[in-house]
Image (tube, rainbow, N blue to C red; front, side):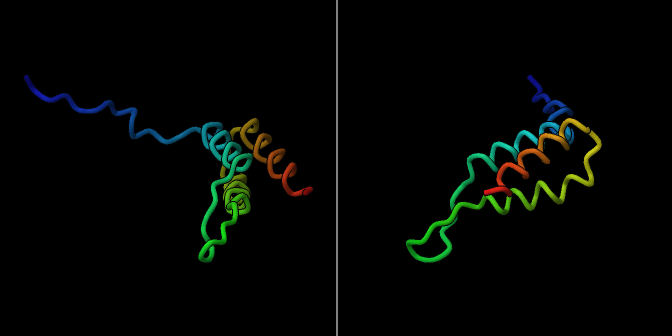
Length: 77
C-alpha cells in the first residue's frame, strides 16, 4: 500500500483573521519568559508589537479592527 502525500492545504498561509485571533489570544493570555534567574515577566508587549507590525500588511478589515481594539485595550493600562 503506497504512502499518501499530506494534503496540500497543510502548507497554505493563514488568513488575516486566523493571525488576528491567534495574536489576540496571546495578548489576552501572554506567556511568561524568565528574564533573570527567578524573575519572570509576561511577554504581552512582544505580541502587541507583532500585532502592530502586521496591521499594515493585513487586507481583512475585520482582522485589522480586532487587533486595533486589542492593542488599544492593553495600551490604556
